[in-house]
Length: 58
Length: 250
Image (cartoon, rainbow over all chains, first blue to last red; front, side, top):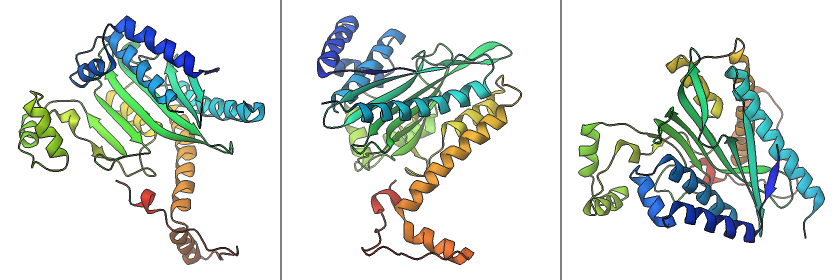
């Protein structure tokens, strides 16, 4: 397996890409997830966004 | 400045952990192609996310037909001494194949606010009586935030209930979840699947037992003395105190 190391810039730019693809803000995505109103694609985007939030806290 | 030795040790630890997960899953489920990917970021600390591919879950079959999907994510922190990779959060979710909402999920959060158990199970289902009881909760503890949500039009669900699983040390492993879904749903398995479960479970429980002994060494020493071992504290400094934040954690 490979480990991909992300810089702060990598995280910020990927985050922007994902939010643009979702067409919704992070809080709105979270709110829809809590109500199980996300499409499978949006759910994967939110999952990746949450991963990036975690990595950004390093 | 990156430390190549530390990075190499991190890679070894992450690869070793991912290999153990892969061995378990390929050892149980026939024809399963399991890969794990890892993302890492380094700042004041080094954080790593280990996740199976594909990210939307591994298909599990009955008579060759996909029935369930299994998703696992581990969020880990690498300590600065480069000694160990600690799981900070984990999720094991089981869903009907193609469905977004899981049937149930096992979550763990090392750092917990005490409002929900650090290791808990959420069951995604329906039970009118439970929903009624949740709507009638006292306006305190979790009932307070639930009342606030209801005022905003959100009806509580069975999945909002966080069922405790034994705290940080005695929570179930991936092996436990895999075994129970194999048994309950009659999933396709390899001939030797129980060996893979036993080996993985032994590794997990030895690690958790070691951690539990470190949390409460005096109790562990007392038990060993009772069994006939000669156990004494032989270091000049005072023995470590019980780690109540772990031993007593919900």
